[in-house]
Image (cartoon, rainbow, N blue to C red):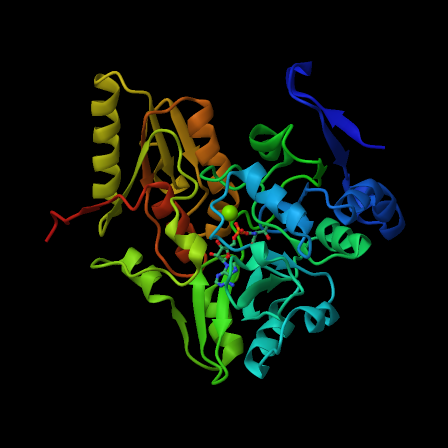
Length: 378
Ligand code: TXA
Ligand code: MG
């Protein structure tokens, strides 16, 4: 039975809510039973939020235009931004895409189920045109989460699922984040606890010559891809430009051009060669903002966190464990809004491993505002 969730018991229509506890997750029979109503709703054209190992997704039958349109409407998402299609079995690919080249197959073998989305040539007339936003390709992934896999399987649908946030808000890593953004506008939420990685999947395009282009950095790192691909792996030039300087060409992953994850306050990233100079600069700027009467916030690593005084201090864990930073980032950004913080500074981190995805999301949240300190030590 679905519980219903009605914030304050007031005017909003209630949202069916299914809690899947760890004991149910570990037992396939109980899991199927617990997901029955949600799977029925998906199959009937409903829109259901569910956990994956990256972030919560807002799922709909990818073949059904009315269901996919309901996803765009609930999120307030621009219609030229295509959705990722989620599958639970590799055999589902045959019905959805024209072909899978050997290099793409190799990456799927290595990383599925997992946080990797592969862009492939879509078969005509199978998926709703609203999923692909008019492109001749579709992004497909198999999530590594027992609830997501069981729900997709029980629904019998390829499941189109963007992150389950209102467009422009940080992606949800808890069911409560989904409720904050979408209660009353969707057909139900499956609560499977906190997501794992905390940032979205890596989106790649794999050419027939085996070369791999990362269109969106995410849970699978460039280094991991290179190890398996045995061929060059490069970042989309637009991402390279964002990470460095110069003109920014239009990105090839359509969604990357939108300002995502923006907190309500003004967020700036602070980078520099000397960690001591970065934290000096941040502490001083926080003090100045406080003196101006602003509410202040800081996102920083354990190594320097004790140096900061602010209304909202969020630690991203140690610089030596960027997995923790990925896991905490979106919840930390949401907290800045909850605390009505107007002036926010974030420490930059090195861009290797998961650092590439963390900095990509931070830059988007900051509207690309990076303050680079010239070292005084030289
Ligand atoms: O981890 C994830 O991928 C999450 C969870 C729910 O699975 N989903 C997710 O979906 O992040 P969404 O809609 O927020 O991101 C979809 C992005 C698009 O904005 C675009 O950048 C890229 O994936 N994408 C999708 N289809 C594409 C295509 N055919 N070609 C290029 N990029 C595509
Ligand atoms: Mg998203």
